[in-house]
Image (cartoon, rainbow over all chains, first blue to last red; front, side):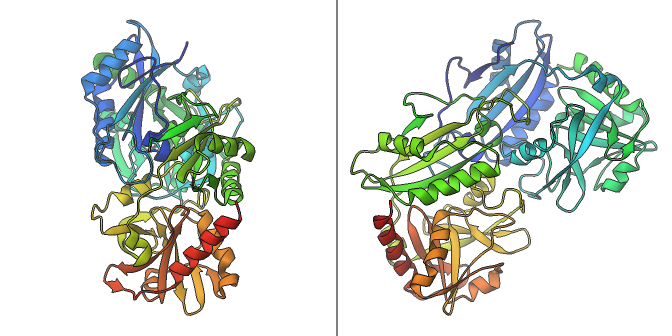
Length: 276
Length: 276
């Protein structure tokens, strides 16, 4: 499938190299699945996009505008990945925000990633990355365009058997994976790291937090060290494109097949189908 | 003056919104002065650009190619600011570096900033920014495109009487200003902060380090706390566009007019003239 995009709602246009999204990573983004023509969990994705824009004092385009762009790019029954980027707009030079900065928004359609079926049926291997996430409370949780840490972390492996890389912060706390959030199960409690120093607060992470009562598990959002993760009963990672995968191997630790990832995935998909 | 640019050496082209420079800030940049048609300290700027590309495993375009672009954009006797951006190139989605990524380079010409004459003749006021720089040794020193910290710091003031913002790291060490490096004078010694945890290693900072013996001062590159800065005999900031300014005021501290900034500026300009 050909990757296609609209810039500020228009096809066939291109981005100015003066855009501050390029110059400084001065913008935010979201990636979501469109299944059979429907942007799933749209309200939740838009809320996050909008909150992240607010955190950087960027005016977010209205939901209706972005949804119209997605409708314009996607066929009625198409299933694709959609990425939305919102930047602060153009500036000639200098960090000061231009008084008249007009945000630019870009909606990109691409094929859904072809993850191996066994990631879903059997779980994944995860590598512990050497790179440690820096702690910047002012940017923590925001899905902004400053993602060199993720790029460098992802450069740490080429082995296709490894599906993800675990990221700790500089003080050794477990934070997330390169493209996923992470949960551990400890008995009947799901634990996911706090993201107030670094990390990206994904929509699927929040959905799992919200689903916990329905699933009959307690939820805890707290600091998590690597030892607690390695001694967990189950470990899962999640994002908006693949849902949830079980982590079966991390460094020297192997976990037996569990049911949490599959039941979460089913639940996330069922909810997807009912709530556009 | 109209801002003009070349992308990969060509005019009238535009950047793909799939460029990883936009998606992740996956690239580096440099800003330099062209005076009377000559890209000043070109060899030093290119060396830094090339080193920064290497640090991110991006292939830097040859110096001759970039210099030809600058020649193409600038009139024979023109004095302008030139910004060079090199990105890793295009990618559809995902942090993994595409095997076939072809770097894109952008050369942008714009007017030299019109700084107030008194910044040069009398010195400047500097604000202590609230934002603290996160510590990421893997990216420290590199002039990469992940600059949201600088953007947020620069948003902390609108008072045009304030020319710069001082940035400390999360542990309180003095690192740099939003668009400048910083030096203090303590007796006959110039001190500038180490940049091994965060900060950008500017060409003018290195030139001042190299000039110190000629100026008859000792040089120290070391951790520097705010108290040491506030009790310094002189404080100066520097970058490649304005050269050097004296800091006359920071928070509650005022410094008398000194001669260091002016003599450095003269020396930097003299060297500029002799070494293209």
